[in-house]
Image 1 (tube, one colour):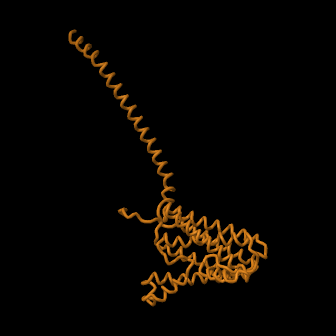
Image 2 (image 1 turned 135 degrees about the horizontal axis):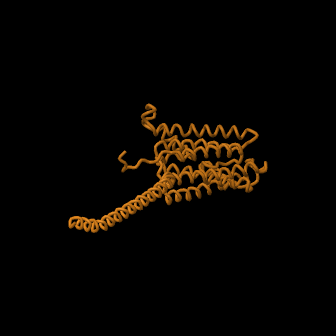
Image 3 (image 1 turned 60 degrees about the vertical axis):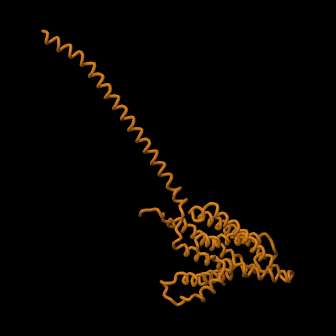
Length: 297
C-alpha cells in the first residue's frame, strides 16, 4: 500500500511538469511558425524589391563603348541626308558649320544679295547652343548611363519630328533658297542644328572624338596621312572608321538629293532622318552594358 501511495504521489508530482513541458513546446512551435512566416514575408518583399530594381539597374548602368563607333558612323548618314536636302531647299547647312561660316562671311559683305546668310547664322548659333547644353547634360547626369544616352537621342528625335511636321505644313514659298525668312524655315533649321550638336557631343562621350558626324575635312587629312593607310582591314580600325565616315555621309547626301528632287522634297528627308534616329534609340536601349572591372566573371 505504501508503494502504491508513493507511486501516486510521484505521478501527481510529474503531471504538472509534463504540462509545463508541453506548454513550452507549444510556445516554441508557435514562435518557430511566426519566425518562419516572418522570414517568408521578408523574402517576398526582398524578391519584389529585387524585381523592381532590375529595370532601374538596367537603365542606370553605363553602356559599353565597344562598337560604339558603329552608332556614331550611322549618324553620318543622317547628317548627309539632312544637310544635302537643306542646302538644296534653304541654301544653308543644318549640321556642317564650316560651310555656314563661309555663307555668313559672304552675307556680311553683301547682305542684300540673298538671305541665306541669316539661315546660316541661325544654324551656327543653335549648333553652338546645342553643344553647350548637351555637353553639360552628359557631364551632370553621367555621360555613358543608358538612360542618359537614350534620353539625349530621344530629345534629338523630337526636334527632328517637330521640324518634319513644320516642313510638311510649310507654305511652298518658304522651301526655296531665296524664300522669305519666316518661322517655317528658321525654327526647323534651329531645331535640326541643335540636335546635330547632340550627335557631335556623343562622339566625346564614347571617346571617339574624330567621329563627330559633322566634320569631314579633318577626317580626310587624318585618313590620307596615316602611315598604315594600306594595311589589312583587320589591323587598322581607326583607318577603317575614317574611310567609312565620308562614304556614309555621301550615302546620306545621295538619299537627301533623291528626296529633294522628288515631290516630297525636304519633308521626306526629315521624316527619313526621324526614322533613322529612332533606330539609333532602339539600338542604345539594347546595347551591352559596360563590364564591371571588379567582376570575377
